[in-house]
Image (cartoon, rainbow, N blue to C red; front, side, top):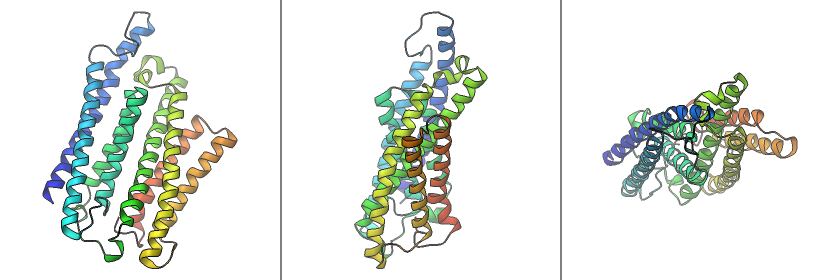
Length: 303
């Protein structure tokens, strides 16, 4: 038990270091971009001085944090197997938060590898760090691996929970990109975007595109996870739907993002409105994932 908790603690500090390095990267990149605006030759990426090594170090620290996070989840899975014969390392709130953090960071690294945009890490890696930090703030009794009740100790926990939590991670990425969009948009309206750290951000069109793609990953995953949850509920409790608070809020979150996709495809909801909606959707996900467990009682109180 203490081995996994130690690895989770190490993950927390590595993600904190990564966030600081990404902030350092955009701060170090700013002078290079200002110089480029003045007409002096610089590297195409805008990196100069400390910016490039800081960016590379940030990526490596993030990757190392992801590996340690994975080792922590793997160690907790081994501990759970010894405890109850179920190795799913997302069987309580602490483990679920840690897995969401893992999925956010993994998704970000894929995005950085594909699009070569490190400044996004300031927002997306920060959300992964916050998720890990929120997990570490839970009381110790919530962090330990307790045996699951017999109805939950089944193969359904491997597929339903993992798929649903991965969808939450995709929505978290979209929310972080929404915040990034709103900040850059405000800087452009004030006329300071070209001479500030906001110049290190990608274009508003690119941020909007990436946020939409993140939602389009999370939306079908949440639909699939909800269907799997209904099948698991029928297996465990004899009914597909019981209007449990977690079930109800998961459905509400799915409808919220369904409305966003409909509005974008049919009403042209892009840019500012889409970014605001992504942030709003993230707040709803947080309440569904975190608030429901502590404010509303139901069958999902275990995680």
